[in-house]
Length: 391
Image 1 (cartoon, helix red, strand yellow):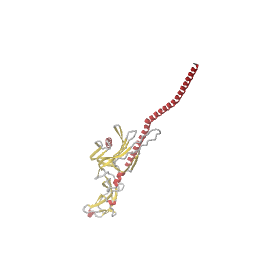
Image 2 (cartoon, one colour):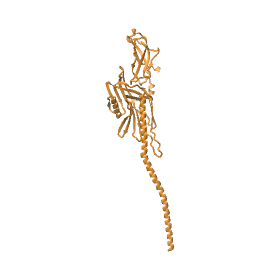
Image 3 (tube, one colour):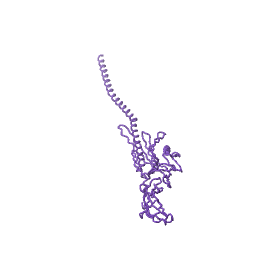
Image 4 (cartoon, helix red, strand yellow):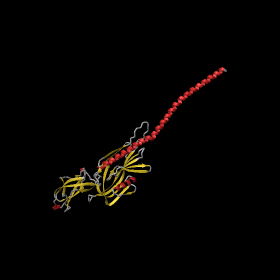
């Protein structure tokens, strides 16, 4: 019995020691693993919180700053156009910063395109009698869409001279007028209607002035044009009202003003084209745009004395702006007998035409060859000299 008890004691002691050793192994293995899992869970929770809250805030700030830069670029473009300068702008895409260990989405896409619009106007210059101006052409509205990731998508619109920012939030549309002018100005653009391929990098645009002039006192008789959307049309109506023009809205996108007697207003129409359109115009004979509207003679063209006479003429296009590099020729006839032609010739002999300068003014000399006894006074008719082999 004693030996058996001793054996039992030994077995119990062995089992106890094995239990303790096994327990020690399990405790020393489980604790580090649980600790590591706990640290990973805390890290992932913090990372997820930063990724879902702080990272969007940081990137939203980047997009807000980008929107401000786009506004500044387009306002600068308006300033260049006001001055009649060439316009070359680059709207760079959003550049998100690299944030180590965090995910950043691809930059938003931008799309620029020209939407066709109609613009018609009829007016007189209040300080010039006998010359009426009118035009009715198809022009373009410049539209730049930016599909931001963290702020509402924005659309920048150059609408016949007004610069708008359109923000669509849910079902509502907010329109902000970015460029308010003290004078009434219409900037007309002829651009291609095809869309530019969406880009995340940069949008480049080059515009060149085709017709630019100073603000003039006009007697506005008719004004009709289409705007970008219903909201911008209402904005235009209010702009015109500020200048004393009570226009009406026809449908959702058309502005209409009619006053046969004329509404006196200080305004101007300037015309820009894209480089693509410029190449088309330069390859045509005669050039399609701009065309001359009439002549304003600043010195008499009815001459009675024989000999040399200086004539100064201002040539205006359909927008009421000076037309430079315009080839001006003459024909002449006598007042006593209209069958008597060529009582005047350009001087020096052999001169076929005279070009207007950058201000639209032509200076030329005429040689009166017939006396007043025979001719009466010599009537000099001004005309557009066009001969293809001369250009």
